Image (tube, rainbow, N blue to C red; front, side, top):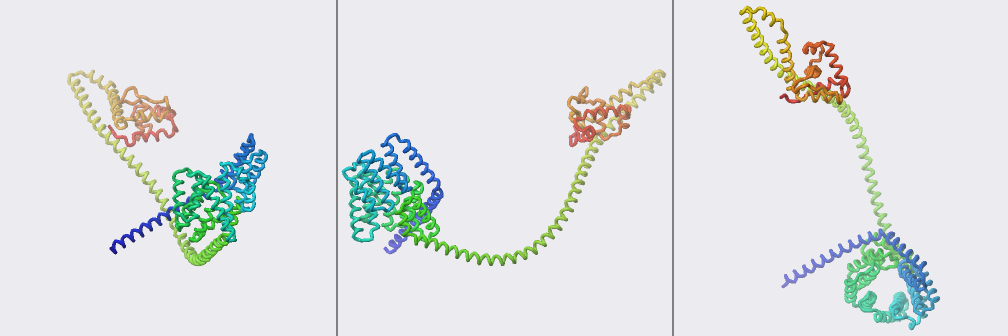
Length: 555
């Protein structure tokens, strides 16, 4: 049994801790949202000013007194929580207009507007005097909730601020009386009815029922920001009376957020939240929120809120003093830390200076070494490039020599066979006594010409086997329209044959002339004529020619 009880206690403790942790997380999130909304106060105020400007424009262009009366009512509703001085001006204008219209219900309405604003500024005596001038018989049914609301508000404030106990009790009874009257003239299910009922339940100590009343209404209705602020404030009052500070803070934060969004300057939630935060040690936020409350109360000229803030001034001043003391302690600690750090820094600077000199000397030596190394690297790179070029030239020469050596040996053997055949044919003619035919065979050049032709054809085939794209690559070096094209595939023209020999490394015009059986002048003319057709620099044509076929495999 004891184990069961212990287990149940542990479960309850764990659930309570979990709920507390969740509540704190929710409240922290709400504070973050509140700070974000506060940072946009100027934007909400600008939107409010735009709306007021639109309503003032509508008032200026209203075609009838009735329309002006309605426009003034809208302006009063907007100005009341924003600027009580402007609201009072609008009330007096509405009252003057109502007297001109000489309509009792409008006169009563306008006077009640004025009484409401006077009560908000703390002028309760004047508010009561004005309400005494309103004949209840002149108050139509649609204005009765407003009539009893003002009386309940005025006597409620008188009860709160009365010094004499008898007067406080008297005003409290009047407050209860007019609260009950409000409940009678408002339809159940409306916001006003729910608020008044929750207020009555709180005053009677039925806090849980007050919470249920407000929560039930809020769950089934869409609320404006201003209405949401009022409902959240009422809930916070119930939670405060129940001792649930966490939930009270949440509702105060929600109410303050809605107040800021609605550009309301006459409020209580943010001030009450600041007081709780101060008691919990969050001095920075408490001081920030209190300053905002003072600023808004001053701008709205809500004297009641200003009086309430005056009562809290010692607390505001205490927050400021505590903040200054904390800053001073932090400053003294920082000064001590800075002093120690300065001494350490000086020692480090001295050591660093010595190391910097050493580093500078090392860097200078490294720089000089790097310069020498870079120079050597450049020389090595150039040497490597030259070596690679030499290797390519050697490989190419080896390839050319191998190709032409094979051709040369085959051709020499062919010539030996031909000479032997020719010798035997001459021997046969001589043996047969055909000496005249021998002399003609010896004198004729037909055989030599055909051999030269075969030699050049063989040269062309061998060269094009080594450089298959020579004709196309060489013509690419010439100007458009100046291409040199062979008459048949696998052959070279005399000009191409000259430059083919140059590509093989035979650059001497005399050797080229002997090889091709041309005069030196003819070879020179060929070279000059083709260079003049070069697409680029004519003096670099033969250098570009030497790049043709680099790395091209032989067929």
